[in-house]
Length: 183
Image (cartoon, rainbow, N blue to C red; front, side, top):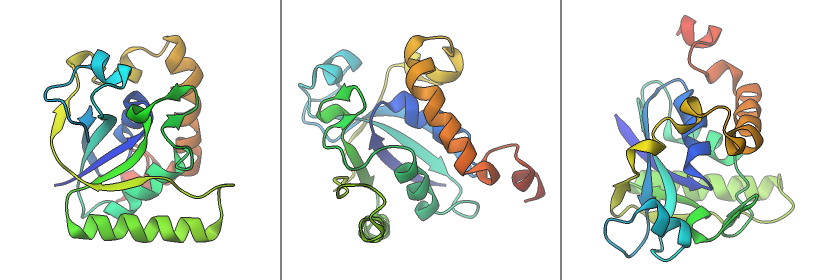
């Protein structure tokens, strides 16, 4: 198993997307990149700890590559908005790849360069590529948040459209898809 640690706005959104991806064995919401030890959700939301909301994605590199994980990551959030995703504003919502190895760093930097060259977005990508430090797991009530709270207004207004976009674009890479069943 390999691990990718990614921040791209609210961790509930990222968890909902990556949980459905073939080759992903587990997704855990948490906090990384800050200065305060043992941050809580309330502290991170206030923006006082320096942490980003992140997910740690455990994946089978024989089934899905780190580059494919990054491809999904960049396709399912706006990497051009500094410290913001939609209405979620603050450094805790920054776009960031916390790399676990030199090869992950290289892959992230190269993909950002390629995507900037394609001019997919109106502005340049501002995603940070930073060495992974300490990961703090989020409180248990964040686990599987979208699946457990589908009627919650944030889930309806923000996460549902993001998951629908992911499922449409990556239909063959979703757990239970025909392509998954063949492989």
